[in-house]
Image 1 (cartoon, rainbow, N blue to C red):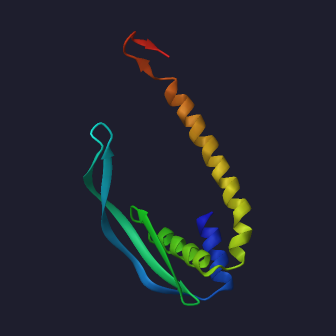
Image 2: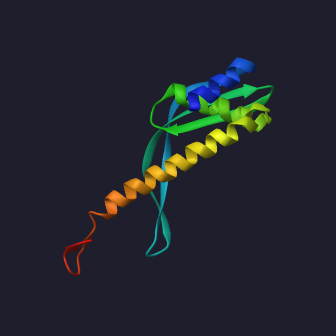
Image 3: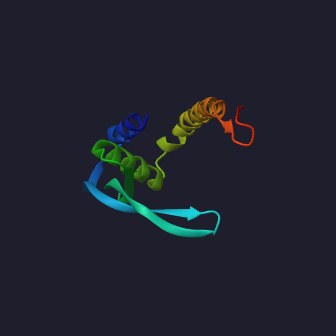
Length: 125
């Protein structure tokens, strides 16, 4: 979906790459719930790209190394930041995709909960 949305922007607007996809590291911060403290768990490989549409900057950062995805995300971000009219048409598509993901996660959670073991009785629930 992200590629289709980015290509839609590229087909109707001039997109200038300000920073081509580059690799970097981001620190992962975690909150320890018992003591309510934060600590740095480690570094995460990220890919970052920046583009510009009509003078408006867009940034795409994602975990891993996917140059095309970083450029697509930066293009979508710039389109949104610029308030392009075609972004309004995306709302229904994005909401449909969000609902599908919520359903998928719920199904996965149900499968995982079926394997949960109660250690006080050693029964599988």
